[in-house]
Amino acid sequence: QTSHGGGQGGARGVFGLTYEELLASGWVQGDAITVKVAIKEMVMPAHPEEGQVRVGEPSEINELAPRVQVPASSLADDLLSMLEDERHADLTLEAVYGDSPPVRLACHASVLSQRSPVFRAALASGMAESASRTITVRDVPPAVLKALLYFLYTDSFAQVRRVLREEEGHAAFAASSSSTAAASAASAAT
Image 1 (cartoon, rainbow, N blue to C red):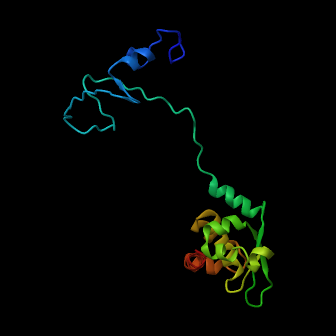
Image 2 (cartoon, rainbow, N blue to C red; image 1 turned 45 degrees about the vertical axis):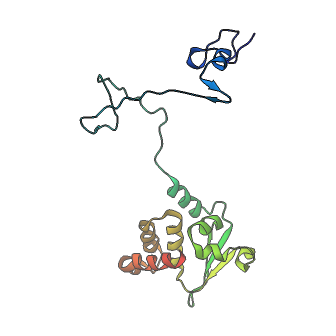
Image 3 (cartoon, one colour; image 1 turned 180 degrees about the vertical axis):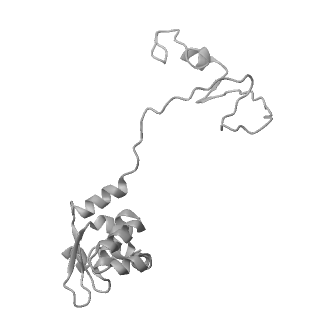
């Protein structure tokens, strides 16, 4: 006769009993098993400094080295690379400001939708921007719109300052008030 647990009669399981012995014992009633547990309270003289509780004789704890080396995060760099290379871009932001010719910036609808409720609404189903895959921005200088994109992709004001400094004709603006301008644009977009 085979008992539960995969062995031939005599295989031991819970409480050192075979399945049949366990069913016949007073531990099992109906479809429930009764377990008796004795708990002994121990008072600790002090809170453990290492985050471990030891009771009784001190024992040596050997911590194993992690088996997986977790690399440093590269998400912001990867997203920035995707923006700069225009890799898999599926949306265009068109900056039309003053008398300057329009500036077109390739970007990703999923990133903009995730990072900005304003862009999320513009890309919602049924909107013209959703169908044309172009969002025209008329009230923001192209350099500031580009800086906003970099902020949305990297979450870094350092990138905002860098973009504003690099944009021709905006060096003085970037040095004096890039954080203020970017913060205004970022809060408007988010």
